[in-house]
Length: 387
Image (cartoon, rainbow, N blue to C red; front, side, top):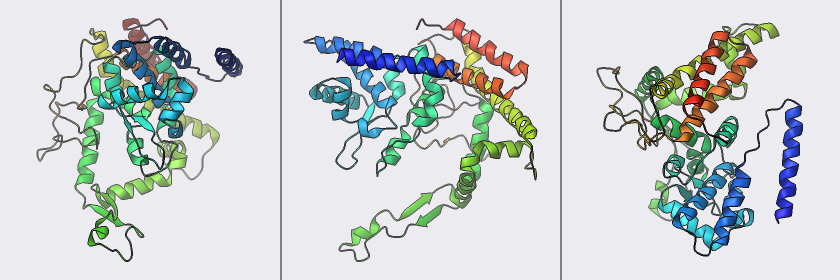
């Protein structure tokens, strides 16, 4: 088995080398090798310590996270085959993680896949740790992890806990926020909340000849508290979903009757400058806190001191909007705020480096690229780790 694994790794490394030589941004995370070493030590122990079990439980969390878009391999039997851990031990570790409310199981037909539901807690408790290389390598791939591969009645539940949203939420829950963005979002919610609720009765949802009256009380349709205007906006947005970038470039150019490649590149440059500015302003409060002495585990946003609490499930800014309008002195927070962890720094670096790559490709103004580089350098100097 070890020989087969080494051959596999060598093949992957050769492929990565070839792709990089061609100029590709190719990433191979060290997760597999590190996890194999830890699992091997765990299986050698006749009576593993609780600390070691917690670390191996962290391997399962990473496994579930990286395989989220393939829920068909997130079952006990698949984990047993892939990780080489006996099923009774897999079941024990998953039970521990479920008790800690870090993972949950889904019933999809005859299968029972697991998904991670609280990555922030797993990181805060020390069960899961990401290296700088892992986090920065994983960040560009996050958009692929927004929808599960398995389609079924549990898809909605699974989609709520997608890795992309969890990493972003983990970061946002514990850092100071860009207040203007929150305020704009609050005005958006206020506009939609003022609409009459929208209800669409779906055909073929109840039996034509129900045996019991209760059968007619099953779920009848789609309800949206945002009202018809909120639903109309989703339709208009979805109509251009495949041409998202093209749509925004056209907005930037005033929706012209025709466009040349040179005009497209100019519109794209201006658009990317605005996205880079938004990233800079979003990271700025965190960056200033880091410059002022922010360290791992030393500071986090306090629930008691914040004036606004954002509901973690539906994202409604409760209390943010009042009859007198929106106050200036507030920050959006989550209800599971955790102290700063290395992963917060790595996430910030991943976002800033992504913005820098996009900015360089779009040939945005040099002063914006300099601001990005200054933030990157300051955060790396303040908190660095040898990979």
